[in-house]
Image (cartoon, rainbow, N blue to C red; front, side, top):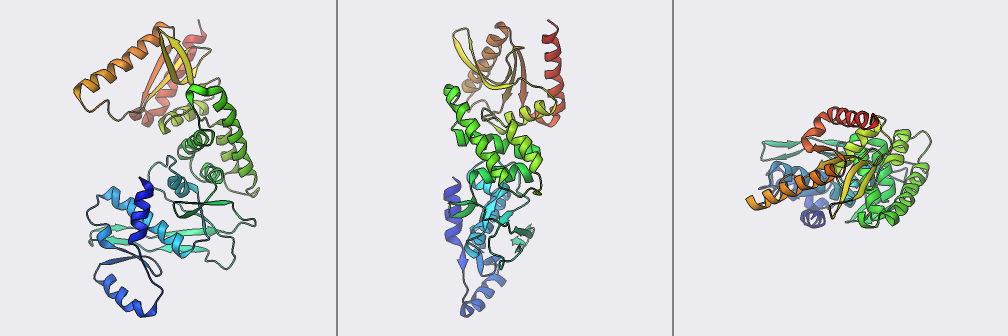
Amino acid sequence: MLRDRVESIRSSLVVTDSHAAKDHIHRRTQKGELIRLLAGIYIPSARLIGLNLSERRTAVFIARMCALSLRYPDYVISGGVAAYILGLPVDGQIEKLTLYASSRDRPRRIHFPAVTIDKNERFSAVTATVSRPRSQVPSIKYLGFRIATPARVVVDCARLLNEQRGFPIVCAGLARACQFDRFRQDESRVRQEEARGEFHEALADTPLNTVGRERARWIIDRADAGCESPGESLVLLALLRAGINGMTTQEEVQVAGHTYFIDIALPNLKIAIEFDGRIKYGDTVNEVHESIEAEQRRQRDLERAGWTVVRVRWSDLKLIDEVVAQVMVAIRSRSAR
């Protein structure tokens, strides 16, 4: 769990502002026992030894954020980094750190030096620019970090990240804010619109000349709490950008004594877009067979009830235009009947 990893790394940091300790710290750094994160804050290299590349990258990132919160506790973290801390779906590495400071006497840039491990592995230096908005950015304390409120984090992701990264975060943020429940959709959809209004209010609190405002407004207007995975969100985004309207998510269908929830549906045309986000179908041969059989039975039931089913897998997202084309063909076929 992220909480445990953060606490483990934070507790391992060596923090010193003492001049008397500087020589000792310098010697340990020269020997490779300590790695400098920020002025006066170090992580023992032993804390990173034994981890694979992905684990080390994550550990270095968390260590840098812990060092930041220790050195500048009043700085507010937002954007993709804060989304990661909140557990929202951040795809890939987080390239840009979004920071806010209310005090004018704080540094405008924070420089994290390169981190070298075993003389063979190096994580590049990172420089973050600190914004100084006229009004204080609302924030909360979470996992020991000072981060913007969830609504502001979502808005900043929609503003600053590209659509393919921002849209899934906003969908997930909506789902969390409204506690989306597919079995209580009427209530969930009411809460979804309330949360959407809060996101728009957070966007309205940003300056008029803020970068990405229009993109954020478009994303917030169209994000859907019913997208249960980043993959579903990306499929919905591609279909929306293609100009397809009238879509619903988690469309409830009663077929052959079963209740199915279609990931993305065009109910008026009875077109179902089903995203298979599973990495594997089971741990045993029987589990794999049962999963595949359940998937095939679901598709057969829907098709017998008159639905056209378009299946999408993770690998298909690399060729998302082909998925859109397949849906467009289904729309034309259904509309011609």
